[in-house]
Image 1 (cartoon, helix red, strand yellow):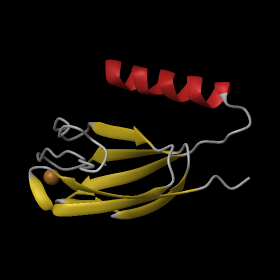
Image 2: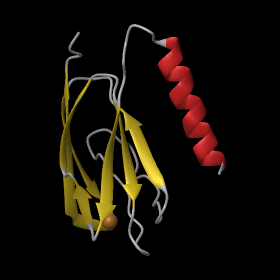
Image 3: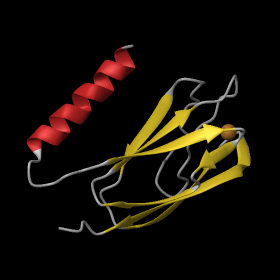
Image 4: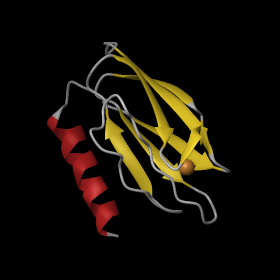
Length: 111
Ligand SMILES: [Cu+2]
């Protein structure tokens, strides 16, 4: 529950402190050991939220280019989020299941 409250607090403070920038949240679901959709394109400043909707399988979201260490696992009904401020194409995978791969493409904010 604390995580949800924290997430909402972060979301609201971000939305209301940046009136000129409309950052969006993009949802990627994790189900049957797949990222759905596996490829997303977002704008700078947007956030991707990965939701684990498995019955009992944990996962993580590991950007080997960006993360110094492998992030912790998250379990069904939990989520993981990351905000992207740099343009680029960022590949990721699930640490325990390297066959699970995805990509986030970040483009310049369209005004
Ligand atoms: Cu996994």
